[in-house]
Length: 618
Ligand code: XIL
Image (tube, rainbow, N blue to C red; front, side):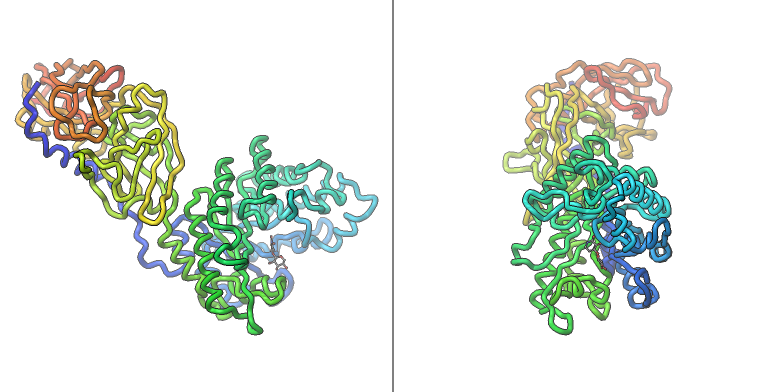
């Protein structure tokens, strides 16, 4: 074993190599519209929109309306134009013209279209009620009507509408919440018992457009309670039985309602979203508005507008923090076309744009949420890889892993390199980031938004699997990722590469400690020192400690080849001066090799380092 003094700078070298891997954070400068800010967060921001479905004037022909809709929103949902009363004005006579006009406007302006709705207890055409009430109408007749309508409408808009509210507002506001009376459910209904009519509607919609996302949409399900419980039970049953449902729309028609204790509380909203996330179900905030008491001019007080703004900000923040909240929409483009004044007497001023199409305080607070809210990081097993070789699938004790964390703003905006704590060990918290393995915080090599490098605690040795989670506390609250479980392998070895690509010339020093390379090849009979990680257990290893020097060797057998020829292993253990978990393997270069780059492979236990790493020999 060689004298290993002179290795202390390697720690900095390794950290520097890894730092080069960092990706830059997306810049936020220059966003002036909600549409731009939402796009930067990867979330559609929509509005309920109208054309002339109930007669002139055609709102899309109003320049102020059309400009605001196309600049501030990148999604629209027809407020009425795709409902039964518009689309099937007479039996088997369809009118898709207003819906088509809205779709054309959306397409011309790069906007998505959310479809609304296919099955509801109200807003159906006048010919249908007597039909439904007739004593001779059978459930089979109603089933035919509903199936034909859903099939015709979804087929017409297939490829144009990305998500449909298939069934709207089916549950009562009572405790417990039950299915409400409707022509489709029980008056006379289409036949199936319980939620069977809803299930059938989803199946017909799916058959007509298998690519559309299918939603159940309702109000007063944003917070915990009897109505959410009823919806959750139905969705759970649907998911368990493979009924094609993708999401739940939280309408979010709110009022101040005892602000700041408004319904739903942000925590309650997050809880409901998480309950659906556990089923693999998305949530769209589908119809948000926050109605305020207004004067005879339809205007609210400044104080109440501020409270309303906070509610908008809180709801948007929760949506951004819950990975399954995938769209945010308000119910109307501006005060001018809001449904609130005509449905809630004395109320109005419910939206982020006023009668002059100008932004209200809610606009600013939504912008604040979109540009500053920290989302919960999303962790996937495929994002946890060896820091040297980028191979994944399993982790090993002491392995330095890089975690590529999807999600915006997870971690400090600029790189924070490793820090030593008061006991001289690598800190387990860098800039507010922590990574836990079975609840044990791991020593961190560096952290930055979107990427963190951690040393797998040696305690995972002997475990079948380990549960990984990361947390970020920038101050003022911790966001916590989901937990992923990965198998634990005895070793997952890899050699660092000079170009940080995981292949090509390795992080290898010649006998004189100079960096090995094409212009600095190693002679046969000399010793090279190879740096890697994932070598598995090491005697006397301490999480986060700097390697104490010679003595504590890799516990599993180590062999190696250079250019396919066995190379004598002189040392395999911690790299003195580097954090425990980095390993150094010293090999004697065999004779008889062809000069030039030769593949070097180290086997630890039964696992080999990655293919494609070379050492230059002469
Ligand atoms: C409203 C429309 O905005 C009004 O124009 C119409 O007169 C009645 O319906 N929940 C829903 C929406 O799912 O379809 C409703 O839209 C608002 C409540």
